[in-house]
Length: 58
Image: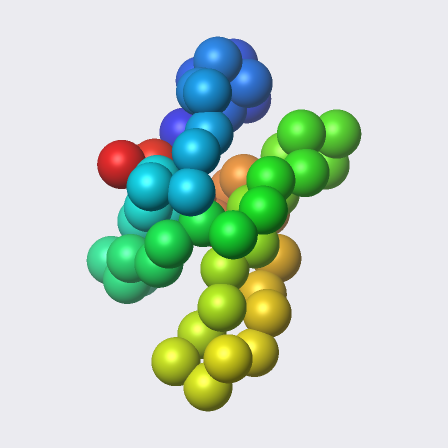
């Protein structure tokens, strides 16, 4: 995903992020300055993911 594509998305809580490894998670927060999204793992641990690890936003 390019930086321009990331910037053009109108994120909502219904969006899901697909990582490069194929895993999908619900997006909890977005940091547009750093181009990162936050999700919670199965263990309720928060993760911030950089743009280079994002394959798609669904």
